[in-house]
Length: 268
Image (cartoon, rainbow, N blue to C red; front, side):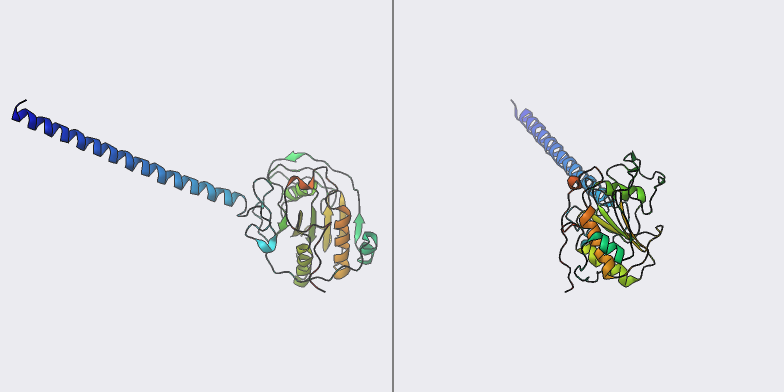
């Protein structure tokens, strides 16, 4: 091979090596673009999931510690209802533990083992069925996973959402929005002692100042009378929580004290 041919061959090899390096560099840039794109897509998916589940997890607090919100895609949803994160007032320990006696002294209407109005699942945002009790104690309700998650809320959830929660043994404490702030915070103090698998929220459509419900059971109090009303709610929870509805209360995990095994009140 002559000198000229050797020079041409050398130049050809250098050109091939340069093209190879350029190709490798292009592949590396492409891989980097794909990696960045995948990261962005994953971040968007996580954000969408957080927004869809109300920005909470299933730890019992989920970022709303004072509201005890217990939610994820498996256990239920906040359905966009804001949490009640107000600091509660301490409540006295119980004095009257018999349900009938406490309800009578508190002037509350006690109805146990009412008619079961149905268990059919209906789509989200369906019209509210004509429940026979106010607040409702049973009946057709929203399909999973839109059952109202355990927790304290500052607004009333949709009835079809919280009726589904009743089916799973939950107890729901409700109060008229016109109830004085001090009384509301005392109810929240009581709720703090029994928030496992239970809910607390205002209800402007019921004929009571305070009510507690489980599936087919109702404690309706036309007037809030302080500690004796709290005693009636406690006794109602011990008597009916987790026992009605046909669906197991433990089907959706929860943490914390329950109406059947509440914490001791913080006020001595």
